[in-house]
Length: 71
Image 1 (spheres, rainbow, N blue to C red):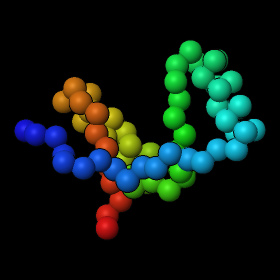
Image 2: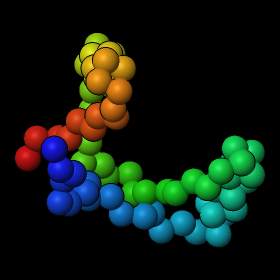
Image 3: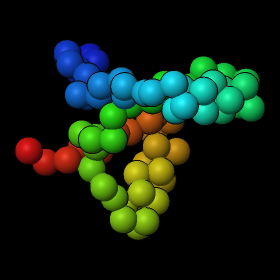
């Protein structure tokens, strides 16, 4: 099985200095880089039951799954 040829349409967020400072403080607290993306997302909004089903399947298959909004 091959990987998809294109990724999700995620775009980095344009942050002002205040937001960028907050992001850097979060990175310091977490000890890891964090990337901010625009709020619009290509991913599906899932109910708690749907998310639990995704997580059960991830665990069974040993993979990460992404659910996309239908076009």
